[in-house]
Structure formats: C-alpha cells, structure tokens
Image (spheres, rainbow, N blue to C red):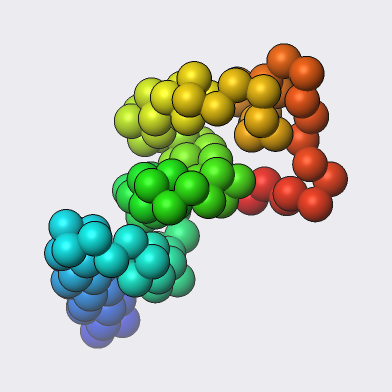
Length: 122
C-alpha cells in the first residue's frame, strides 16, 4: 500500500513539474526566446520522453529559427506519438522548402532529394 502511494506521489510531482515547465516554455516562446523555449521542452522530454507536445512545440521553434532538419525530426517524433498537428505543420514545411534535403519516412523524400546520411531520426 505504501509503495503504491509513493509511486502515485512521484507521478503527481512529475506531472506538476512538467506543467510548470510547459508554462515556462510557452512564456519564452511568446517573448521570442525560441532557443530557451526549445531547451525547456528538452528538459520536459527528460521527464516524459513520450510527451508528444514536448516534441511538437520545439518543432515550431526550430522551424522559426530555420533549423529545418531538427524541426523535421521533432515533428516526425510528435507525429509518431499521435500529435495530429505535427503532420499539418510538416506539410507546410515541405511546401515552403521544395527541393531541399528535408524529408522523412512518413511523407517520403521530396522529389530529387534523399535523406542525408548524417541525419539520424529518433
């Protein structure tokens, strides 16, 4: 019984920490500090690696800072975790950048490109 209560308490504390970090990251995004917001979302991923929103939001930040390959990887992972917004944003990235080396397994390569050998998807 005590082990169950302790486990539930740990889960609750983790959930509270994640929500606090999400609020902080959103504030940073609104202030235009996209690099710091991305770093906070990465902190969230250390607590909850399967948090689709913590993959999606950095995808937005990375897209705005023109870090395309990282944005694609983040959005791909968010999509894999069930975030329906990720597919829509991925389509926008692809439409904006025809002919670049941005591609992924879900959508396939952009015509005339291939997946860079140095890029590992997670």
